[in-house]
Length: 249
Image (tube, rainbow, N blue to C red; front, side):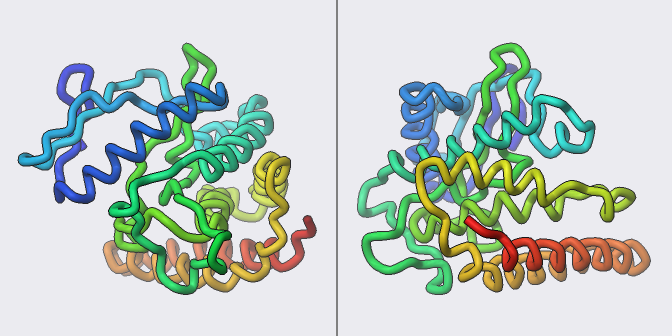
């Protein structure tokens, strides 16, 4: 991703960028119609060159940054994030040719799966200060599942967000980080539309996915820093697992 004037330009495999462009365009319409969120406009997609361009939105702050700075607006925005994701799952539909399934462990029974955001983390859900709107970024799937899936269990998006709250804890505040309260607020927002009665069923999947991601990211650090990183993140993964197994709808 690079910034050119007032445009963010993304390059990559044309087929993947085409899916991201379609998802972002449809999400822009869903956000506009629901009034819950917005998405940067797709300015241009060049099929041959594999170039996707979005409008630049200034003055964005991630929900993670707001949590770190203890912004008093955060609880309301977390609840709204849950409501937003529920609407995305209800309204987002892509052509059959773009229906790429998540790995089998992230698929619900037939008829219960949805089109997903794919990387719904608290660094991709932002607050736009001028408009006071939620803004959803990055409509490609997370690297941990290969960036290709577009369809599967709603619990993938839900738990990616909950997990990002826990794993986003600053290491100096690991023990005092109120991840439980933040996650519950988000889940209440989503639960206004859909009863989330399978969180425990997917607890092992999200924790395993995060352990794999921790190991991968640790391998990119110097040994001393890697050890500290792994210790901190594994602690938060344990807290995440305990939260999910104790959570009651």
